[in-house]
Image 1: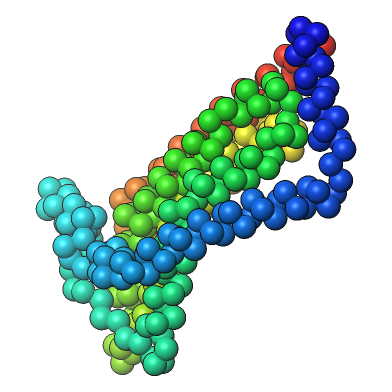
Image 2: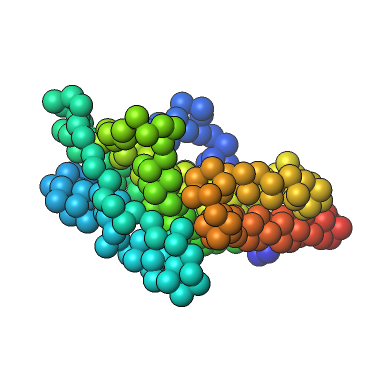
Length: 282
């Protein structure tokens, strides 16, 4: 490292050291404000595009013509599995309270704004964290915003296109008695669709969590390997709960989760090896 680079790095660290706790809070506040503005802007756009958001996105998975329902029906014909014929009878929804539909409109607009603005939110928080990192740490974290955003979006799409229609088929048609008629509340339906999609987005961030937990020494590849069987059982149980009672649907949901877990082991191993190499080089 040249003398000029060394001086510049020390100067940057000095400036960071001179920032008080309140200065950091003020900086964080502005990042949060900018992120909130981005969510609000996209939420307003989603609010205006009510017909598309509800008819083409939120309410679509319950209909036979939804892409996943059509593809599974075709697959069912090929393999001779009638259980893959899901959501062939459209689920009827009702609104109980006068304000239900309006409140759902607002809630969905905010959630849509959050999902669309997610890359910008991650970018803002990365800008807040980045000055505290060393140059080598910044290099290792290159592309963090991009990969985090991509994994989250893939997770949301996975949940929406696969888990949501399977869950609607199972929960919407489940009956404890012929005397009990399902009258699904709109709030319950929308809550199921959004919670599954967002939860899937968070689950797909597993490799990112593994990377940072391994970086700080909390998680190791040995730990993940030791409890691999336990993790597989948990994934299978989760798949069994949210899918219809057939092995094919459970495998379709469980397989990506297993792949993510195995990718996490590889990431953790590389992080640990890199840390050990850096310690030996010191």
